[in-house]
Length: 190
Image (tube, rainbow, N blue to C red):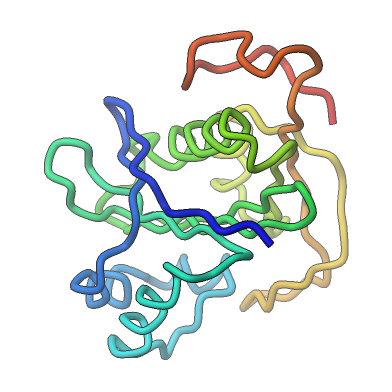
């Protein structure tokens, strides 16, 4: 099993870093109805449960949990967990309402995917998006992911339709570092 210490990865738009236990209140209170509608986040998560989850994230071998933070202030803006499944990174995210509309989600997805590939943790990345979540689909496409079809949903969405749309960003053929870190690569086949 892979054990990864969560690093800080950043650019001028977004900082990805480990969650801090003192941010448990933000984690619980920043989630709104849109987060609950389109993700599998538990509505009745307590601050104590969130703090315990942040503590236990340091020892997980099947996931990496990033806080999306403002690179200037280091204030949290959202959540970006990465589940590791047999060479594929399955990404998810949510952004606090006050931070939406600033392109941080698409930039965070792009940044974490490049990092996962560059350090050799993953050879492909996926997003599973509820078919009704048009905003998240736009975020995925802006980040460089391509729509690849449907699959049966394993996520307990509030609006359960039984399937999700899969978006993928496989590692392009050839050498891993064909461009500068953090730059968008050319079109990616599914």
